[in-house]
Image 1 (cartoon, rainbow, N blue to C red):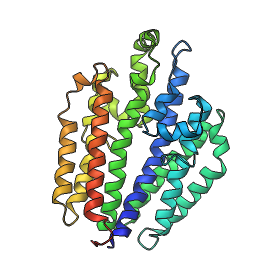
Image 2 (cartoon, rainbow, N blue to C red):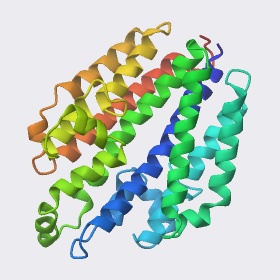
Image 3 (tube, rainbow, N blue to C red):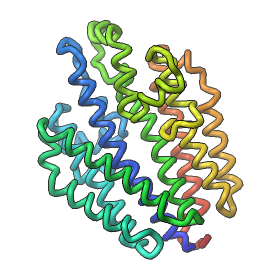
Length: 316
């Protein structure tokens, strides 16, 4: 397989997963905003900061309010992580690799992009936002299922699985950041108010990851921060848990040639997750610091994957 083809398949999967999780992130924050009392002020700026694109945002918008932030996350052409940009990039990568992926995948991603583009005004409105985001999420899940169920699980699929799961692990940590205390204003009164709704906060995080039912089945305890973090970071069986997603990356890299360095780094990142002291993460700012460090490690893993298999003068 040519390295440029492998790279397009890898990024196709990342962009599909990115669009789904961006939609989950906005949905989670909207649910949190609706569930919290008016006395608790949520920071729309936090939604942008966890994407790492504050500098891009501030070039185009004067203030951090609901309208501007939602537009930035859903449809801004300058934001590489917006839903529309992610779907546009996914569509282009599928178009240029149509001989390797099932025809239904091209038809579905093309349909999804055109829907997201044509209905974006509905998504930006409060009334139509939930329906718009749910459709994006469900179609992205449909694409993931198509690829898993109708494509040969060969080297091409290993690049897709590696890209999807690395993006999933990264975006799961960002979804945890959405629910973290750092999204509140720095007013001590807001922090005190949030403490009264801690259980609601963690339930919202689980639901944003479609994890609530599996958490109740396997943990079987009252929803609390320690158990939720342990489940989302360290559960080996739940597909959206960070440890599981990184394990899938490991399996994918194991099947590829010249994998020694990249595979070793993937194992190290997953070990870091599994050995994390969850109790300590609940201390002030520790969760945010841990997530930042973990995201840096996953970026290094991505760079190693790119250096190993996507250099233009190499083929695999």
